[in-house]
Image (cartoon, rainbow, N blue to C red):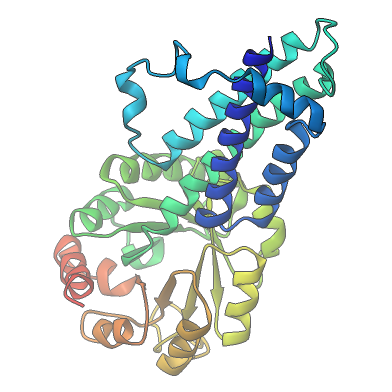
Length: 345
């Protein structure tokens, strides 16, 4: 029995440590790291005499299961598979301890109800970590041409076909901006656009409307100062969804990053035909934000094929474009030319 306990306690410690390291060094999540560390310390035995008994029982050199060759264990395709494998290892070992603790065998510190609670918490933490890793992967895809699909700029043309053409031209992100249609019409369009983007490997973002973003299962939501407060939006969005925020000053950008924005839009960089009278922030603000903020930056406002190179040099990871693409008779070609500027930087 002691050998079973020793093996499973080791598995729990090893698995929790890996989950803790991923939360700490990949996700940079202090709360997850703290909880996993606390769980690891609380579950492992503290009684010195019991630790000595476990160590004395160990027979690693003759363990018949130690050197079994299982090909599936020799390779993990990505970090998320590491999380699942190690969470499962912890869950299974906790179940073993839970069952053993129901037997009155004089083993100290084994509370089957407490172990059961820990097992169910690991189920939750596995989900949270994987969702956050998914979001991190999506953040890394915020680059290049970011198309804002504004119906007014389309001048009656089909938005779904426009999105397809822009994606064929290289658009990495498509944001639906719709301030006129009914919620039902917006949702119908959003569902189709999300499918189009997923089929093509692009990200789909909804502007302003949290309900549409949630109902359409969009990859993210983009908001500004006049919308839902950023912390509230972060709490309401699932952990794998992106949250973008529009800013016009360095202070706003820094505050947005602290509040949980995954990427930040900075603008208007130039006068914009789609938003007359918007405050011009200019390239200097973009440069200052780049120096102080670590999340991806999306430059927005009056950006076109001619000026996008200087926006890139100022620090933009992506460029939000409306008229320069949607007003063109050749949406795919206009998209391809702008995206090409990012690929040669």
